[in-house]
Length: 209
Image (cartoon, rainbow, N blue to C red):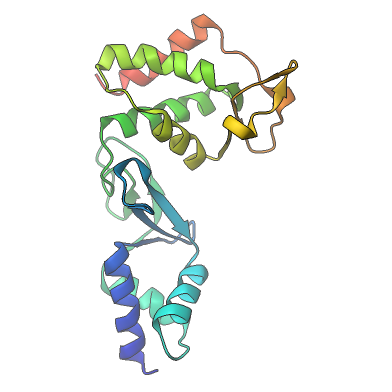
């Protein structure tokens, strides 16, 4: 396959998916729903090598260099230094997940909530405590219901393993829904006190008022 043909195949894939390449993370990212349902929209992430393998195996009849994929991203102006998540305007060259998705206020609030939980070192926690904190925020911002799937997606995006339904572990003898970050185990799960629930809710609300 000649250079122009390889780049053209890559460009078509990038444009169809609306992909961007984050250099620091070596990640190709795009926001889509695998089912077509609005509630299933999420960020998909792949390495450049994984993306190259998909395009080459599914859309190209001949092998081509991964450098042509990178060149296609560059020609389309879809290469960024790194990704950030901010409700404010970011400097040129950074990829802002908020600006490049169809996220509404609920998505942003949930992402802020999860970010604040991590900032406060809550890495193994009960789902019910997260729901309590969100209910405080929800009442203040007058958010709509039906947030559970988006909450789980926000937790997973930040690196949590969401253990619900058939995946609930036994904690103190009872099957319990929880979220575990990194190498945390069910035995590490701890309560968030009412005072801390209120404090975290206030930290989140400050970003939206």
